[in-house]
Length: 154
Image 1 (cartoon, helix red, strand yellow):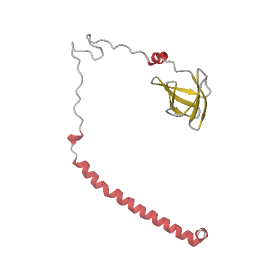
Image 2 (cartoon, rainbow, N blue to C red; image 1 turned 45 degrees about the vertical axis):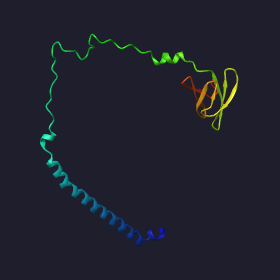
Image 3 (cartoon, one colour; image 1 turned 90 degrees about the vertical axis):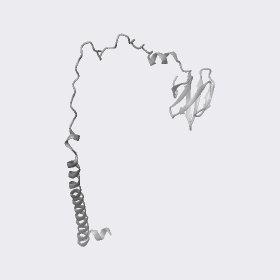
Image 4 (cartoon, helix red, strand yellow; image 1 turned 135 degrees about the vertical axis):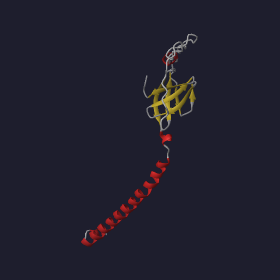
C-alpha cells in the first residue's frame, strides 16, 4: 500500500480524496453558519427594549440620627474571643511512639515502654487506632485526635 501512494497515480488519487473531503466540509460549514443567522436575528428583534433596560439607581441618603452601619449599637456586646486553635493543640500531647518499619500494609510501631506492635489499618493498641499506613509514615488516632508518626522519627 505504501508503495502505491509513492507512485504518481497514488499521489493524484490521495490529493483528489483530500480535496473532496475539504470541499464537503466547506459546504457543510457554510450551510450551518448561514442557517442560524436569520433565526437568531428574529429572536433578538422580539426582545423589548424595556426588558433590556437597567432599573433606576436609587442612591443612599444619610439621615441624621439614624444608625451608623459601621458601628455596633450600644446595647450589643462585643463577642468574646475564642481561644486560638494553637492553644488547644498545645494542651494535647500525643503518646510517644516510634514507627520502626512498614511492609506490605503493615506497620511496626514501638511504644515508650519498648513494646513492639505489628499493626494494620483500623487496628488498635494502647488506646491508639491506626487510621492509615503509608510507605514512610502512619496516621494514628488517640483521644479523638489524629497525629502522624514518620519512619525512624524519635
